[in-house]
Amino acid sequence: MDGDAGTERGGGEHQDYEHARYSTVDPMATGPTAVAQAFENQVAYCRDNDAPITARVCQGLRELIDGDRGGAVMERVRRWAGPPLADALPLRLAGGLHALHLEGETPELAPLYDGQRVSDVSALLADVIEGHEAVLLPWLDGPPQTNEAGRSSNYAAALLWLADRGLPSRFALHEIGSSAGINLMMRRYRYDLGRTIVGPENARMRIEPEWRGDPPPACEIGIVAARGCDVAPVDLTNPREAMRLRAYIWPEFTTRFARLDAAIEAARTMPPDIAHEDAETFLARILEEPAQAGTTRVLMHSVVWQYIPAAQREKITAMMEEAGAEASHEAPLSWISVEANRDTHRHELSVRYWPGGEDWTRLAVGHPHGAWIEWSGG
Figure 1 (cartoon, one colour):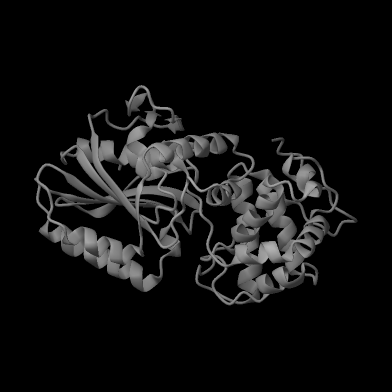
Figure 2 (cartoon, one colour; figure 1 turned 135 degrees about the vertical axis):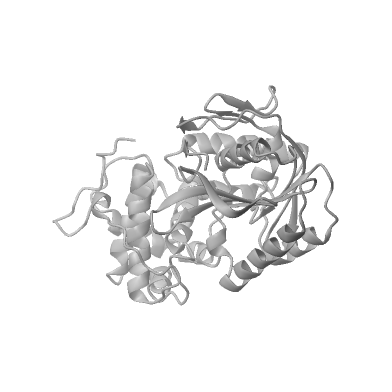
């Protein structure tokens, strides 16, 4: 989309998304100021990640916060009780609005989602929100599900790096916050990572992020198991649940829609193994199982850590470090994280492993949906 096709200012009172600025804030902050800043940060984040349409939507919502329009939906947003940044509040509402558009319920939103100029985005959104209150309110009840196959290219690069470090190249994957399990099916995908090729030749899903820097090591790797968990798992074979995932895809990234279609087809053939439980419970159960010689156990997650309560994050870390102390070279343990750095607003691929690599090593930074990866290799 043309980055200059921004929202026109109506009478000088509406700001363009290009004016949004990041502010470093406590992700657990609450209150009206935190709500406004969460939307401001989301506008800047979308703008800087090549998502001008989503930036305009979030900017229009940001402007509504300062007024009195939007009915019960915006009133709930203004009075948000939890931490709006950690709760991804802007994307909850943006997802609901996108769903209305995708389902053809709001033809008045078509110009906005087509990237056309709209003279008063906030007024347009207020009209839609007030007219579809009952549909939009439930979208505020839970965090967004942004299951994206493109992020698994980070996992693949990390597995190559771990194998190059001498860990067994047979990997058993365990993902927390798996959503629909799209990344659990990564053994069925083919990757081109800076000309390092991984995966089956006949794969329907082919992922080739823009690669910056040296390629990851070229190693033979195999995934022998893949299990995950989620507190609200998504069934890709259920059309309503698949539509919810589709609504959370930013409309600028058409490739992601095609990937979701391919993942749905893969799930119909062999659904991913996802437990309906929280991350702590899942990990405790996995770590109780005997380690297998010749296999590297992997805990992995992408854009989920912020949604896990702090006390649970501490327990997960303690469990991994305790299990890591018992790991051996024949049966090592590793941890792959693809999460946002709240200070730099960039997503980082980082790895720990036991024995021998107990400290975090940052391997790369990348686009939040896998469009590009800038490799440093530690």
